[in-house]
Image 1 (cartoon, helix red, strand yellow):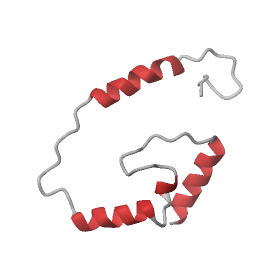
Image 2 (tube, one colour):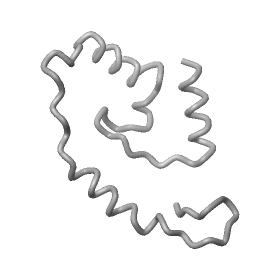
Image 3 (cartoon, helix red, strand yellow):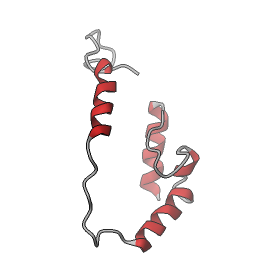
Image 4 (tube, rainbow, N blue to C red):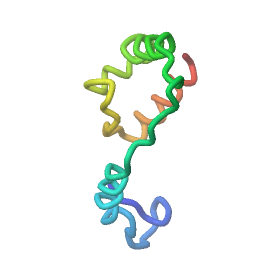
Length: 86
């Protein structure tokens, strides 16, 4: 995937070459520690059931911790519409 100023533009791609460094930077940031009472086991169980069931997240994501998937623009639009419907 590459990016231009706007679709159909001949402007140079100033973003794609920086994405790997941005990703590395994001992964290098420490995760903030949540407050001790922030975890709600019942809500986590509901989220896991939604992830594996009705929302069908597990059909693209191999495991709950996996957030990176490659989608076409149409697949992204379809996913947004599906998530709005549930």
